[in-house]
Length: 458
Image 1 (tube, rainbow, N blue to C red):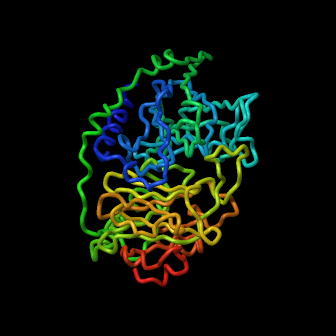
Image 2 (image 1 turned 180 degrees about the vertical axis):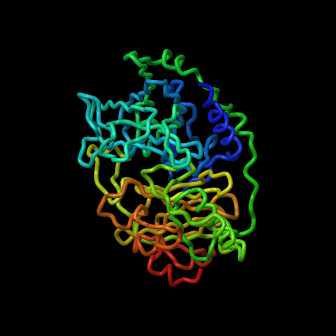
Image 3 (image 1 turned 30 degrees about the horizontal axis):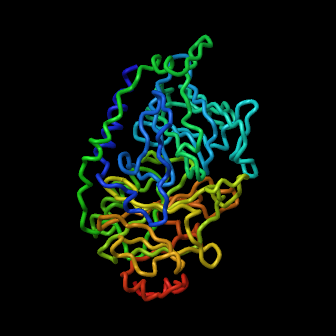
């Protein structure tokens, strides 16, 4: 089974190469709490890596989420089981990926049927504190049926694409996510990690150390000390992508996202965009989550030291304080994060419950470095704040998760190519943004009137 060990080596090495040396938590937005520590969580041989703001902060993660990575070889004629308990959290899911870290299959929490005698706590109106709360996910080496209605329940399909062909793959690259654990619970939502079981042909099921021995224990995770010793990514001083008014671009795939890296550069920008093309295939990348759709916008200090965003923002259920019943919303979750482009690490994030609203469902969000923060970029003035990060350029990522079918303004509804239809489809929910000087934003006074922002001179 050593044919899959190249990925076990490449993935940690990629993380080593991309991680910066500082703590993203050090740049947080003041009142944003860091998640509880992961001490005491049992982890079997399947779970190799966990996201961490200091150590493994790459591929543009979300601060309110924790990610666990597994490389799971599937025995010939058998299958793997992930036996777990629904977390006390906003959301949980499993995604499978190809070697390009594009998602190929996924199951969201509401798609997981509980074990007999257990309850499903994630459906709208369900008791979130229900117990028992057990489930089992099957991971099989197979191509999923063309008709989703023919899928086996609670099953993830591991396969590879060779040209136009799809072939079963004996290696499943999986990421397990937990978003916004309830207050007082650890980052697993108080239930620990799903445990691995190996179902062999003939009905034999191995668990615990026997399962690990059967799959051969994978190479160890690199030492935290080595990761902490790395220098930050080299600063890119010129403005290569940002415009005075923020331009939001829906993410479809790796190539089309990279085609916009030189948008602000005359001649070279259009040449790169034309060379890489504008795919609308939604194949994803950067270990994206199929339950999210993403938009990005670039910021540059050359255009102003403060980025200002205002507009309507969707509703989402509130769960952080342990609400007993799962609520409803236009989305299950949304967030806005600032990121360092080259290392792919997040600097700071705000998610739906953390965002202070004004005039109903509107909000004002200011992005700046700590030393450039306007005096009125505070909650008392009706303003939310995100840390820009240490570099002259910053990348904003806006996420929409699991939209309600009647929410037509979700990012999921925006067709391609990137940059063509975002404002048209999202309407009032399009996050208007522009660069300001610190003095220009402070001139708006306190409280800040969102209607005055578009009329102000940045």
